[in-house]
Length: 340
Image (cartoon, rainbow, N blue to C red; front, side):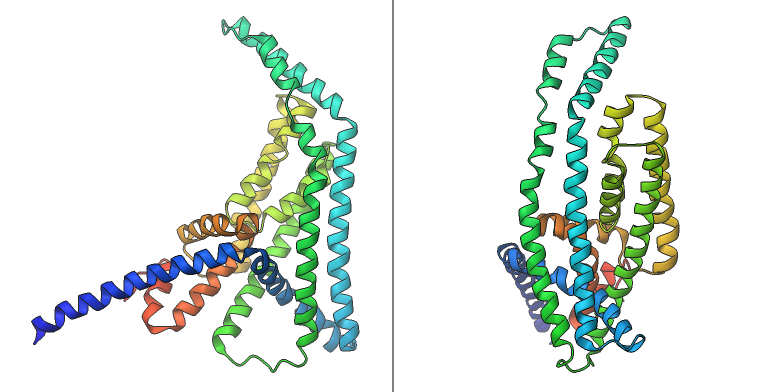
């Protein structure tokens, strides 16, 4: 009897694995195909978990009427988004006013470096290098940056519409009693709240450092550091490297560049590796390797928005898998624990 059931067991197990792989492929294809709608929807859900806290605070602590609390929350979101767009455009405009000066600084630094290399016996055609640097399309890319803002504004409009529907419908929606959904929303809310505070702290400190050295686009780089801090692991590295080209154009290859980069690196390291884990505790209960894998997967599926959303989405999926008996071992693996 045992010998007859054993092949059947392996057949069922193999079939389950194959069907799971096929289903995962279909779901991934659907995520890619519907990303134009799903990305704003998911972002609006995550923002809703933060804004609903503000709305409840205004309603219960300050006795605001529901319509006023909702309107105030929406206006705060609109004001922040509009301020970011206007600030970005103005900062790039100010930078472009000195574009020719920065280009000359770049050419001068490159020529000086090539001259030093020649003194050490390394021959490089200076004319070819200088010509290539003069033809760099960097400043043209910056000038065309405004065109990219249109898609951002259109997506933000869709996010705003979703959030309005969520906020207005919160009164008619009965309280959530499902423990899985409550746990998902609670984890996402805590994660986003802590990330918001630590990212804001990172942005402020980086702004102070860059302003102290009178770095061009200082506040814009601080804004990028704030946003990039939501991307796990890779975001902090990009936040440090992003100002390097401007630092090179402004100060050249010298002590100022290394000092500023060192201060930025120390800021990102202390907040990201010492302060943030202290407030998050066990965090989203995901293994670091899983965090990196989810970052790669969601970046491939949804691009930059996927990188921002990778951790909360993966953590939510892990919670759902942990509630289902047959997928509980997968949830344990995502947390870095061997299933029993």
